[in-house]
Each structure stands twice: as C-alpha cells, then as structure tokens.
Amino acid sequence: MDLRTLPPNLDAEGRCNERRKRVEKNLRLPLSLLAADNDRIGHADERNCEQMLGCVAVPVGYAGPLSVIFSSKEQRVIHLPLATTEGALVASINRGCKALSTNGVRASSVNRGITRSLAFFLPKEGQTFTAALTKNTKDWQAAAEGTSAHLKLLRFDCDEKDDHIFLTIAFDTDEAMGMNMATIAAQAAGDWIAEHLLPATGRFVTVAGNVDSDKKPSLRTKQKGRGYDVSVQATIGAATIKDVLKTSAQAMADIARAKLRAGSTVAMALGKNLQAANIIAALYIATGQDPAHVVEGSLADTIVTMERDDLCIAVHLPAIIVGVRGGGTSLPAQKQCLDMLLHPKTSLHRKAQLAESIGAAVLAGELSLLAAQANHTLAKAHKKLAR
Image (cartoon, rainbow, N blue to C red; front, side):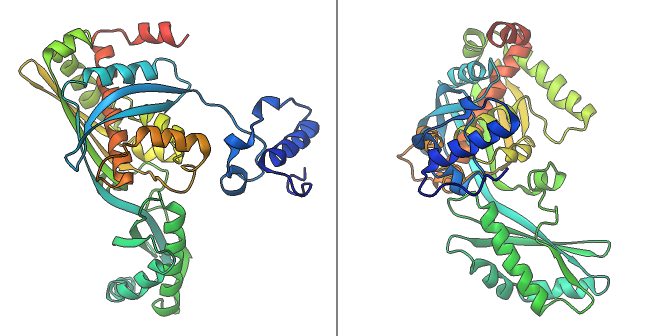
C-alpha cells in the first residue's frame, strides 16, 4: 500500500482519512471508528506517528483532589487525569486520595538525567582508552552539548565488558523528556571520540549499548536512577484507615509484610510494589509521555511501617521519565490533561513537579490497594466495577 503519496493540499484530517480508506480497501475491513478531526489530531501525523490513519480513544477518568507537599516546600492540591481501560483503577486511586486528604503526601525528587550508553569495541588498551575519555571530557562534552541549547551533561560512567567499553552519559534535558535529544548528543560525542581518541584497533559500535537500559528493567537503573528519582511518603491516622479504607493499620502492615517483603523476595522482583505501573501508565498515556517508560517506573519500592495505630507508607521510584515539552505533550488532548495535572502556581521546575505528582498518585494507589487486600475486597471491587 502506498500511504505516502497523497493528494496535495490535504490537512491532517484529510491525510488520515485518505490513508484509512486505502487500508480499508486493501484489507477489506471497516476502520471508520479510528476517524478523528483536526482538533484532536494536532501535529501528530507530522511529528508523532508515521503513516497515521486515525486515533484510538482511551477512556480518561478523574481522581482527586490530592494534596501534595512538593520538594519546594509548597503545598498544592492536584487533580489526576487517568487514561485506562482497567475498571476499578480510578476508583481505587480516588479512594487513596481521599484517605490522604488530611495530611497529604510529602514528595521529593532528584534529577538523575536521561542516559545513553555508547559502546566501543576495543580488544586492547581498554584502561588507556577509559583514561583518555576522562582526560578529554570537556572536548566530547562540548560536542554533545553543541547539539542543543537545552541539554547539559550531568555525569558519565565507564564500564568494561569483554572487548567493549561502555560510556554511559546522563544529560539534563530541561523541560523535554529528552530521549531523542540525548541520542543526538551522544552520537555527536561518540563521533568526536571515534575521530580523536579511539586507537586503530577500536571502533565506535553503537550509540545505544543497553547499559542505559532504556525501556528495559535493570538493577543498574534501580540503583543509579534515571530521569527523576522520586520519593513520596505519608502518614495515615487510625481513624481515617477505619472510616475511609475500612480496615486497620495492623492488617495493612501484615499484608505489606507478606506481599512486599516475602512475596517479592521469593519472586526476586526488581520492584517491590503493589500496582505502581498501573498509575504511571494511566498518567503517562493521559499526559503524552512515552508509555514504554512504564518499564522503568515499575522498579518502585513501597515500604510500610506502623507508628502506634497509624500507618506510615513510603514509595521510592528511581526512574520516572517524563517531559512537559515535546513528544506527545503538545498534542491537543494530552496538553489539556497535562495542564489539568500541573499546578500553575509553584516555583518547582515543571518537569520535577510532574514527576513528584506522579509519585504522589502512585502512593495513593498503593495505599488503596493495600487496604483492599487487607479487608479482602479486591475481588469484590473488580467484580462490581470491572465486569
């Protein structure tokens, strides 16, 4: 099928309609429900999706309000747009928000940067080459940073395995998620290194050597962090646990001990949490993030302790990978969801605010699911809301 040679002067809606008609004719299948108008398409068929023929509608539910004390020490109320097809998920997060309404969630974050790992083949002189990389950092850093006015090098690591040296570079990409930005910058750094530092026996193999574990779970990402490393915590009083969550702190602590500690250890899980990926995916899709980065988001750990009859819950998310500019964030519906989630009056960097807001939402979801398992209503809720 030729989906690229289209009649001239078509707008986005016309281009998508023409492609869809050609696919329908070729496959002999109706695809009319994929249709979308210009207001919804935006620039998607030019910047986000090649050979675009339409859109798939994903339901978006509301949860909140959720009170968050950001790392800037500002307390704000946020509202969560959740894109999901999983019945009971929005209700669960909403209940968690209600339980957290008294004291809110305390959040903090560290920008670990977006990473790319360059691979060099070097059968000899590995230590000499690594030393040269360190000695000439300013030169290849300048080559990388010269590709964008919005990109800065944060740190780098060198690893050696067999006949390969891996240079993993972490970049601050300002308001963008920055994966493409980092790739372009890393390629420029690799080209400079290949020309000036590599001996005749070596070669620049690839700009993406997997040490960065992009969109893949890894112990390295869990330990070093990627994107934003977010920590959130809250204390829920015994009365709230009884009235809103319909259980007790002791029952929830018992579930946490069995599920998060023992069960996760048996499974050798990299992420010891209840449902972090559920919330991250719903917010990523709604706000135009790359949903494949849910993989790194799932590395979260949830820790539950008791303080007399109250419950203390904390979640550590080492890799929340988000942006507030570029990618899918400027598509019409996604931009509205992003505007709904981000609080306009805070001194916190918008990307950090988004990461911390997602962390707070994850904590609300963790809290609610923990309660549902403690009072054995998980199956009942799914039977009622998702069947």
